[in-house]
Image 1: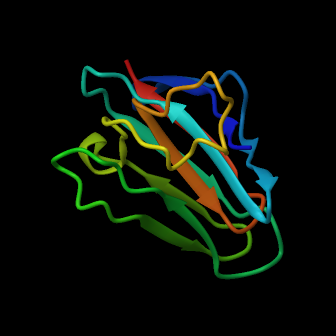
Image 2: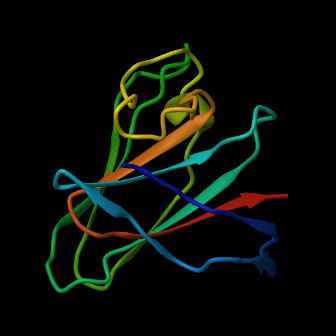
Image 3: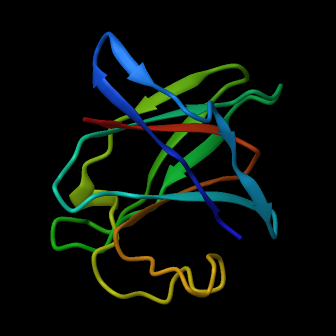
Length: 133
């Protein structure tokens, strides 16, 4: 099951609010995944992904979206032990805007995947999501 991630707020470069800290992605059949709601107003988001483990070359992937602006390609970063990546995704590239069955078995049955961004990893990555307000 994909874990619903908390979206924290980022008001400026000097002021941010994190309500849950880094969240660890949960395992489902050897895949660790999470998702968050991306608003329809074109807000700016920042994702921090951390490899808190001791293995190098661990990958975190933002799944490709399905809008007309998406090439439907995943975006992957590789993290060595202890590294943190900052990712600022473009909503047109990663947000699901059309109906899809792609995540039907991986999110709660009453959850619509539209408007969401999905993140996966092959390890228990630590993730924090921020929205600029």
